[in-house]
Length: 115
Length: 113
Image (cartoon, rainbow over all chains, first blue to last red):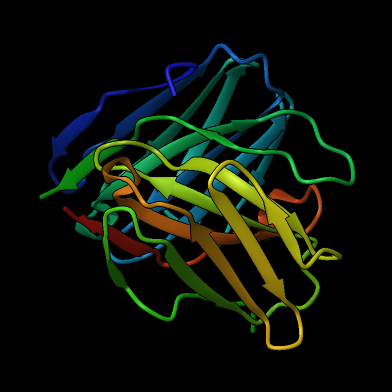
């Protein structure tokens, strides 16, 4: 979805390096998410943010941190990358929801390889 | 525990035939069940969802069926086309809580000409 962009699209790094993945959206959504996808598995939630001042851990937050710099920007950091963090990372956004499900719109993904 | 899984990891269908992708779930408390399509090199794309109080919902060429008795969800694609080739994920969501979105491992649908 062109409304959700991720940079870089591909990154190869070494163990111990600090890496930042960035996500920007033009959809005007309040909610943003970071997911990780491993081969043969579904997406797993790392962190999510319901607005600029709200950050929440997801299912697999260990080894990751995030920053919500603005409504449109949500970055994911690996402070000290390790090989088992090699995966495909997706950013997603959704509109503010109340009691109903709100569709998530995904970016194109960042393929990260940690050697 | 909570889990959303798939009966088959791959499905091969003749072009023009109907496709049926199945999914089992174990969390009876989910409010919504969702199907996503992921094409090669792209992020997942929402296809259709169904609330837990419904049995069936139809979209354009797609139908989702929910059988709460056996905790089974299916996605039916009518007149399958080459553009339907992708990995299909089922997922479940409990209301507006992002932490409760659980994705299955996916079924790869391939189309035979």
